[in-house]
Structures are given as structure tokens and as C-alpha cells.
Length: 167
Image (cartoon, rainbow, N blue to C red):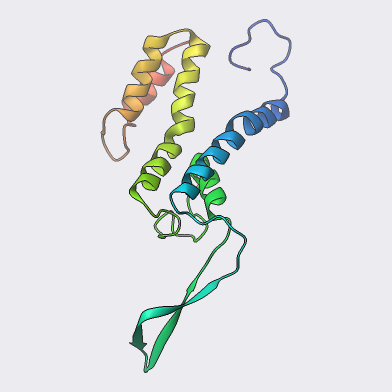
């Protein structure tokens, strides 16, 4: 609101914007993403650790290991929030490399897309702010279209392109 409004006396209330973005964007997206992840086999429960018998015991350090501990918990909900916020880490601290956080190829695809949802939405929102769809398409293509340098689609030319355009 601080960038778009031109004839208002104030820029608005930060907490109103924070509450609206949480209730109307983050909460519904994380709920839908958690349901998709549960449908793909990511656990969503409040159970404690489950101890299971191994099919083939392992001999390690002079003793036989015959059981395995499987951690459980509200993994799908935490994973959805983590992916939308691009925070990293995860429920098990392995950044979606643990099999219970990312059990299928479809869940992997959904998680990769969910990381980019909010930044891609910011590119689309800039079109509404500036009333210039062409500039938004150029920004989107520059950010997500090609790989240059050490960062994926982000280089010094992008920064120049961001700051030479006035809204």
C-alpha cells in the first residue's frame, strides 16, 4: 500500500497488512499444500516414535541391531509452512531429504513449486502496481527463465533492470 497509494496521508498499518497476508494468503496455501502432501504419504499425526522390527538385522559394533525407530508428528503441516516460507531445515532437519518429508516424485514437484509460489506472485503483483504487463513479463523471464553466474537467474543486470524502471 505504501508504493501504490499517491494521495493518502499515511501508508497504512503494518499489522493490518501482516494479518491480511497471513490469513488470506499463507494460511489457505499451507492448508491446501498440507492436504496434497498427506495424500502423497507424508505423515500428519501426533504419535510418538514408532519402534519396528527390521526385516534383516544388522551387525554393528559387535552387536545385532534388530529394531528401528521411526519418528512421527505433524510433518505435513510443518513441511507446507516451511516450503511456502522458503525457510529450510524441516521437521527432521534435513531440508526435505528425509523420506518421510518427501516420499514421492509428485510431492517433490509440489514442494519445488511451492517454494516459488510467493516470489512468482510478487512478480505478478508488480504488474498491478505499475500497470505495465510487459515489464512484469521481462522481470519474470529474467528471474526464472535462464541461468547465469552463480545464482539461478539472478545477476547484476537484473538489479539494474529492477532499479531503472519507475512506477
